[in-house]
Structure formats: structure tokens, C-alpha cells
Length: 111
Image 1 (tube, rainbow, N blue to C red):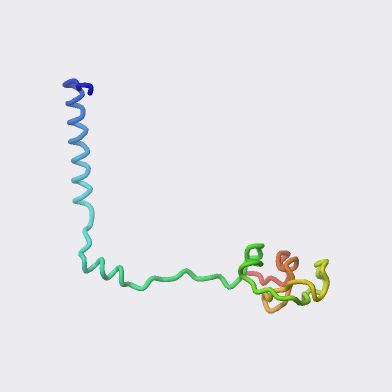
Image 2 (tube, one colour):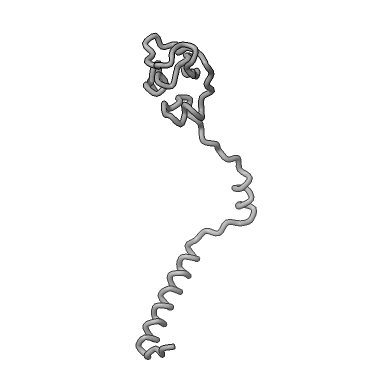
């Protein structure tokens, strides 16, 4: 190991003193929480994030958030090339719609 010079030792001692001062000051400024207060905070009911009622029109939501079945799309201008009873449809906003109409935003309510 390499030996430190007297100047380097003094510099390290000064740095240690500054760090110690900062830590002591921070610990005095920190508010301590009693075990009772911590227990009260931990037992408080947690609010749950609310789900939006509007289903975002995306591929992920089509495949994982809607329940599909075989049927006919309610859109009279549907562009699904598969036809009436071979298309998968899901109910959104009270209408049965195919994936194409779902992703295009047909009958989407304005937020």
C-alpha cells in the first residue's frame, strides 16, 4: 500500500469533518416518526387508481380488454373483408363492432 503524505491526511481529515457536520445537521432536521404514527400511516386505507370508463382504441385493448365473439358488425359501412358471420366482434359503447371499426374509432364517445 502507498503511504499518504501529511497534506493528504490533513485533507482527508477536513473532508471527514465536513461530511460529519452535514450528516449531523441533516439528522437534526429530519422529523422522527414514532412507532404509533408509523402504524397509523400503514393501517390507513389506500386509495386505488380509478379505471377510465373510456376504452382506448388500441390493438392491446382489442385483444385483451374486450370479449370477442363471432357475429356481424353493427357498422353499416364496415370495411372488414371477412363478411357477416365470420368476423370477430366485441361490444363497445353498446354496439357490436369488428376489429377494423374498433381501431378506427367508430361510434367512439367524445371525452
